[in-house]
Amino acid sequence: MLEGGSLRAIYTRSSRLFIRAGWQWAGLIVGLMTLGALLGWPLVHLGRWAEVLGAGLTNLLCVVGLTVLYWEMRGSR
Image 1 (cartoon, rainbow, N blue to C red):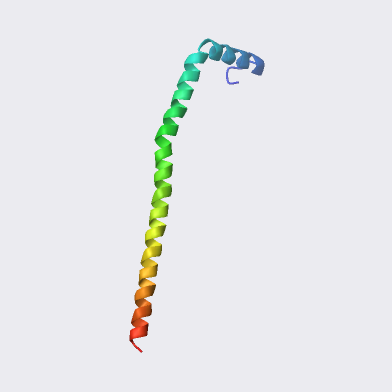
Image 2: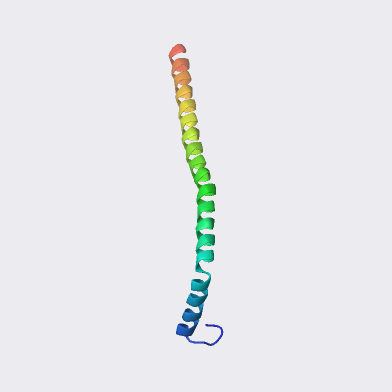
């Protein structure tokens, strides 16, 4: 569009470029997507497990605190 050509001419030229080097570009795109998936997957699941672990530890500390509070209140009578 910046070159002043028609949209059809620009699309034709870029599609020819992709067809000539299509397998190389496709391989590069698939490779980058695979790399992103392999590197991103553990980070996403690590975050989920950290959330579960954090919630479990917080709940455990709350239960321990409530139990101690109960026994302290019961013993002070």
